[in-house]
Amino acid sequence: MSTIEAKLQEIGLPLPVAPPAVGSYIPVVRSGYLVITSGQLPFVGKEIAFKGKLGAELHEQDGWNAARLCVVNALAQIKGCVGSLEKISRIIRVEGYVHSAPGFQNQPKVLNGASELLLELFGEAGRHTRIALGVAEMPLNAAVQLCVWAEVTG
Image (cartoon, rainbow, N blue to C red; front, side, top):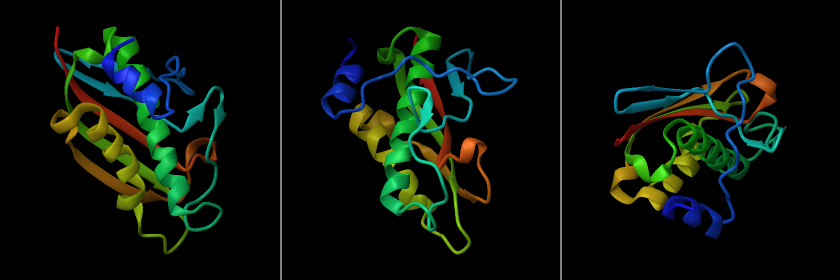
């Protein structure tokens, strides 16, 4: 188990097997030293853990937790692609989409769940650029979807 996986285990977010794609796309791609995941949902096993819109059925804290699950699933995709999370030298970018009810404007706070987890796991190498958008509808009624861009070694 890698150091990153051990940290995830300690905080109660064990690294799962990478979830399969839910459409006609690949879940992760590598080009040189750059690895980019497709949009990751807050799956736990085969179930979406947080369904609904933030500001309606769900509270901000639910979204924050959903964002953390999305990051864990993105890390599972990256590990599946490169073999080890220890090969991640830097998190470059997080693109996040929050399933938002009309008037909900705390998308950045929701996505802090993902950003704070990456900082906790990777330190300064986890500091990244980010986009936080609210969307009216989401695949499988998921609360959050995000993709991660990472630089890897080897």
